Length: 242
Image 1 (cartoon, rainbow, N blue to C red):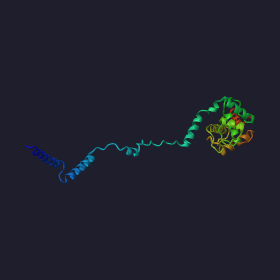
Image 2 (image 1 turned 180 degrees about the vertical axis):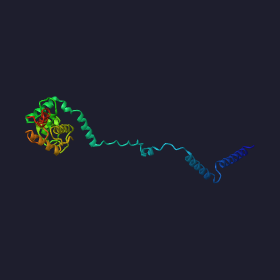
Image 3 (image 1 turned 90 degrees about the vertical axis):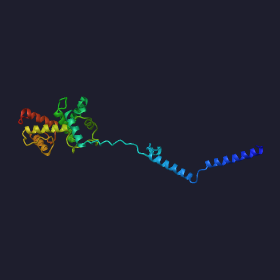
Image 4 (image 1 turned 180 degrees about the horizontal axis):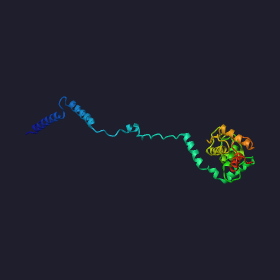
């Protein structure tokens, strides 16, 4: 074959090869859109069937944190019951201040200097507590019959306005003193006297009657003098002279 014929045949071969390759590369009409649609459908099916994963960070941040269940509300103790329980405890054991011998001695010394009969015993016996109550009654204080820092403060510095006044009910130890006086009055010839631990009008009038009969200063209040006279009557009888 001549050189010219060889070049012509090679050019023809290359032309035919290009057309064949172009045919293979170009999809059939409509096949391009169909392929895209198929791919989109497969993607939708994959999303629908995929397991639910953890929420996105933004969702995690907005989701409320797990809160523990609220505990049941704690029962609020009844205030009146708490006060009564505290006073019952005080009724069983003496106040801490009364265990201080120097405090008790100072209170009794101050009361004696003011003319209140607190007896001669070193301990806080019935007569001493009655003497305290006489001072409390004369100064419009709540009846306690107790030796306390507050009482010594009142004796030395006077009223501060913070103390409970006589309108408050008697403290448990004061009730003990009143009950003991009522019992002694009943035994001393006043059978109608009630024993309830309350300084009622009836008890006040009975005290006055007893004071007049025993030539005491008529006051109608609990006092060391009253307790001492009731004890004297209990030992020697109602006809014994003072």
